Length: 477
Ligand code: ATP
Ligand code: MN
Image (tube, rainbow, N blue to C red; front, side, top):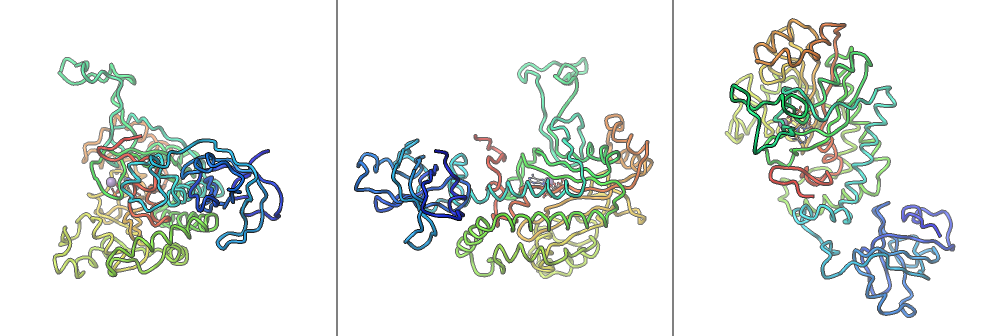
């Protein structure tokens, strides 16, 4: 007999027929009621064991974490809390789980403890829900772009570019680190390395994606990205997944429209596909917030927050306006910010971004037209000569979720900028070819997938929304 997924059993349109379910025991109550979960849904199916006719030795093996297969009638449940249950006629223990040793006990565990057991935490309700939502969000990303005719481009993970302009890089080498080949000048001889040159893990697929946008029109990447930034925060990973659309003939306004429409689409998609998981995550968040002081609790529940983002336009504010707001803000005047905002040109820290989003505007904010000298070399210089067509999207509880720009399409201006910053023209010869041959206005952005998952799941630490997080001093599993 073929087994049926718990999700399908719980949605069954008929009753009183024989079914087979397989899964892992979440709890076993009164020597009679198994709560069985197989990961297809957050909900368990109750399996009622005929304990009088089941050997004591078998009953003892029905422990939390054990894998079991049950065969029995699917019937309407007498008990409260579930529509259907299985009256078990045959039970088989597929894999035992020592109740004394299994770390995932049916009780509340700290998130820190769960991180140390990342291979088992997915057996909890919360992590099952998070990982299903993550998967659906990934599908939503592809669905959105594919429906709009974007081409999915796989940019390289090992890159030959030393300056992708986005952050500290991890080196990739096949050289023996304890016996490096040295040039006559005494430097490491990368000519002898695997690729015959110095290589890194990518920090962004943007530059390669731009070359593809200049032929295919609308493209997007969705792949792993690496940053060797030693910032141990709740929003940074050393390995994360980034979504980077790049569109020919889009200016900065089109770019903002695309980002906003995209984010609203994927949230709506997930609200439609994951109602049970999101409802669970909403109650989890409410529970967690009870331990916080009133002032720090969010004013909206998770679902209210998600719906708010769908129903309201993101507030578009220039960097210059933002500086004025921050300069006159109470935390700035009372010197509550760690970095005080005194003048135009200051780089915004996450405390400032969060003030704008959470205290001042109380909605997602798109900041645009940043000072040229705090942004990357490839951003389009404005007519004022001092700002660039950059945009960052800031979200409540998260801070920056998107960073993007209209790209500098003018060869001369781009070269000039690279010279000033000391970026090697020869190394980026292929990138500069896009400006030499058929250059055109184009724009794109990068969205950190985990920051999106953080927002949608209401989790607060980025380590909890990726299966096996990579952070400074941590690469277990
Ligand atoms: P931040 O200021 O938060 O470090 P950034 O300015 O370095 O971000 P970008 O280089 O613009 O970010 O990257 C685009 C997007 O990738 C960001 O908006 C963010 O969503 C995501 N991102 C950047 N760095 C990380 C990281 N270390 N871990 C997870 N996501 C990241
Ligand atoms: Mn960064």
